Image 1 (cartoon, helix red, strand yellow):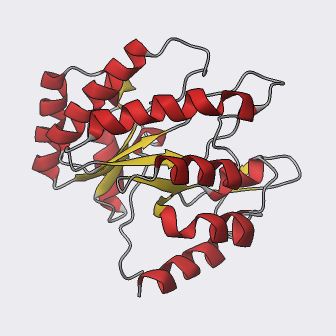
Image 2: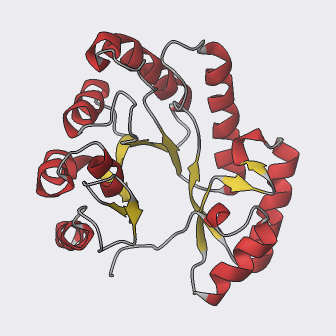
Length: 233
């Protein structure tokens, strides 16, 4: 597809970077959304370890499409200061790996409670992420993960429009919307389309929320990709 770069979560192949790159090479994919590497999450690595990872990537001609970070993937009731410190560390990692995207989340909501009750806390924490990333040239990507504040299209839109920041955009994950019993297309797509900067090609079934090969579920992946291509022509 013209204008699209294909990337992969390579840690679903193997925990070790060398094997990840060898397999992706065979399929002509040279970009990784780096999440797990060398047996731990990327953001758990020291900066010196990240420099070694970058050296390995450069030697094999690989680039990082985004950091698949766990930032915002804690309970909204958990302490925040150490997590903000981890985010600042992630910003440094992004600089070393020469990527402009960090994928993030909007905090798990206590089971049985209304997400709206925690809206102000979610927005306040995200404003601190935004402030920390100011001037870095990075784009912060919010993913619609199940059970976080922004797991429905309306709450995703609320967060994005409330922050009103040019470097906060959406990762659109059709499977995650299906697992929340939301219509990924056209409902979610139409609501969020002007904010989408990145997409996960994933699919799932409404009947049991299981993840299935893309195009074999209820996420209408083909329709979404077709619309995104038209939008960028």
